[in-house]
Amino acid sequence: MATLPTTRDENWRYADGAVLASLSPEVLDQWDDMTVAAGESARRIIVAGGAGPELIRVRVTVGDGGTAELFGVVAGDAYARLEVAVRLGRGAHFQFGGVTIGGGDAVREIVTRMDHAEPDGTSEQVIRAVHWGTATGNFLGRIDVARDAQKTDAAQDFKGLILERGATTNARPELEIYADDVKCAHGASIGQLDENARFYMAARGLAPDVANRLLVQAFIGDAFAALEDEGERERLMALALGALGDRA
Amino acid sequence: MLHINDLHAEIDGKPILNGLTLSVNAGEIHAIMGPNGAGKSTLAYVLGGRPGYEVTGGSVSLNGQDLLGMDPHERAAAGLFLGFQYPVEIPGVSNVQFLREGLNSQRKAKGLEPLSGGEFLKLAREKAGLLRFDMEMLKRNVNVGFSGGEKKRAEMVQMGILDPAFAVLDETDSGLDIDALRVVGAGINAIMRRPDKAVLLITHYQRLLDYVKPDRVHVLAAGRIVTSGGPELAQRLESEGYEAVA
Image 1 (cartoon, rainbow over the protein chains, first blue to last red):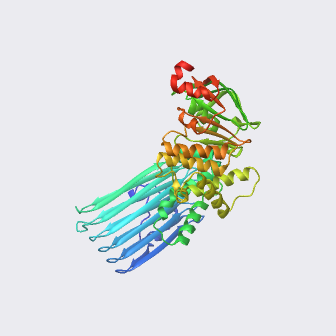
Image 2: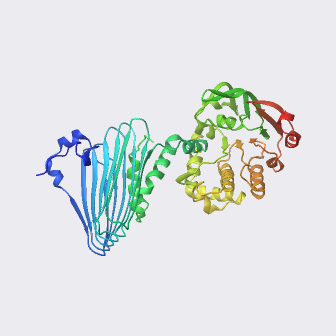
Image 3: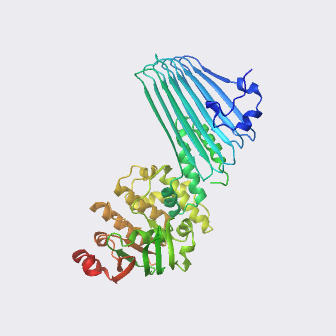
């Protein structure tokens, strides 16, 4: 049986310690498996939006030449963690888009571990975090490229948006690269809403809540840009924006 | 229409406007000219309500309403349009979405029903046509990837769609080539040269005034109007310079 993690553990350091202590240890052994056979492709959509704490852990295994797509929204009122561990076969692709959004005092986090174990694999991760109140949005993203995984092309892009003083965002990109012929693009930035854009919008008559909503929508839209199913894209967008409520 | 009385304003505690008084009546177009640092853009931003521009004295009314007591979006709904010297790029938000939300926010403030998507597109197409602006560009993100001239023409399309009572155009002519200047000038005339509307044109140069004939020209220096006259004043400024005239 697993031991409960604490915030002293690097992979849980920004988590909600009190919630972790209250979990039953079995949840740590609960991994949801997503296995994509060689040459196949599959997509999964994950939404954490409940009132209580949620720990969603997905283990993705993609066979040679296969493609897995995962899109997720973490928008609940309590501690929630979406954790994704991916192992790619030769020439396989993983696409990830994730959004954490919310206020209150909850911690919402997305944790990814991308294991490029074989050559020619590609992966793209786009993560956006929007928080207000005293909420915290975290992204921990690790990319491992094994010695033999030449021609790996891995991209990881995180942006955090803090809507008001008091909210927190933590980003921890981590790249461990042992192959020499690879591309690993990564970026992490944290900022506020663009005041120039807000004034421009106000000058055209947009009420502040309408303007903020449009700006947040534009900000998180990147995470779902690669989701081809327009209906699903709109559903996820609506779920994420729903968290704004009257707050925007 | 617009009455500015003894307006004082500062940025970061530094006084920029020092007792500016100006009236623009319905049906009139006034030009404000002046050297760099005179406070021209500050005047535009103070009228628009930009955060950081603090009014320390005086009053401004638009059609009898106290402009300075309103939030920026309320000023827009009250009929004010601020044309930006540097229109802002907004990635991820299309012009159509931006303007429809703007127009519908304004309509809501006036107790009018919002325009549907179809009605809005019809209006946008008509106004874009007036400025010879490609409708496809309106489907792109706000000002993203637009050239300087395209941004200014887009501003005029916005003005056409929002149909304000009073426009403050802050150096709309900067960054325009001769052809674009002509199109923008014609646009200002077509949209705003009406008995129930008025314009305050802020400009460095006389050339826009070849296309948009001002009824009055004012020279702004050190935060106040130092001299006013008819269109001939702009000609004199162009040939003699600010120091000689003001």
